[in-house]
Image (cartoon, helix red, strand yellow):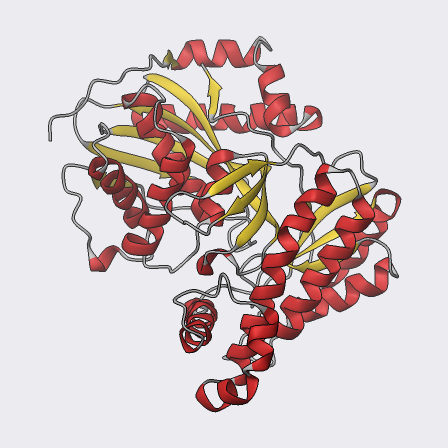
Length: 436
């Protein structure tokens, strides 16, 4: 493969620092991270400048950002062609990137001792790379090449503010970030967000080896609050929900319970597999389209053919899939109390029917139920809480009355540790570029 000449012109590293320090992009940083977080964003960028110079020398750079995401509704519905409600958040993967004149990709990331090096002239899937960052990079490049987009080598330094294992899709943010580097440097920014999300999902499914759905990558790529219908997963219907969570009287937060996502792939895969089993017994490939009455009327036959857990999980899917459009409507109408009632119903269904709050392989480890029980008692019927994302370990999500948030955060951090409670700000659809 002949390296492609970069099309977007980055800034010399020294000029990048000048623009950063003179305040001319403070407005852009405020849009991305919130006004109060501008100083911290500038510190992160300056640290990346130092890392870039140390790792690769003085060069021309482009600044990019790819956000994490939070799931607002649709717990474990995306992998069965269901509907989801998701939002991009201010926590992100931030990068400085510089084009090369060959096909080598070199990425130095904070938190990783060794750099990632991938030659995008070789895009063959490698079994030994599965569950590694190398696999994500090679998989994204392969997906773009398959769609006849241009590739080239680049050097990059990456810093993530998305905590690993916190259920905020740090992996999807990284995959989308890599896609955006190829997009901005070598394709004039013309690759649409849906294509970037699809390429990132395929990379995670096939090259990385995780059977995830589509929601994470779409939310990271498209940003804002999204109502996504995956009835046709190759051409999903996406609606930007014109709503803001800030100013509604509640603080949106996640609590990292400290549980590890390691060795949970089988737990996640079992949910999709069991829903498929029930769907096939009812004459369908996917659970989307099944009706509650249809499932309940067939229970005697289905109990003999599959597990009761599979039936409960499918009942969750049917009812959760119906909840998502109602959640989107209530947000768009500014009816926060109706929205929070649906959040509580989603959480109860995930706990009782979906059963993704405790790992079957580690039944005595129950940080998610503990965090939910504590939150319910601290909120005393106000606000809402639910398991967040894939479940089994990781985080819960809470909507806390603003006046109560400091006390709530202190109480939860006494149990789960300093920094375990993280306030989330929804990031609007702002694109990937920091500067130029």
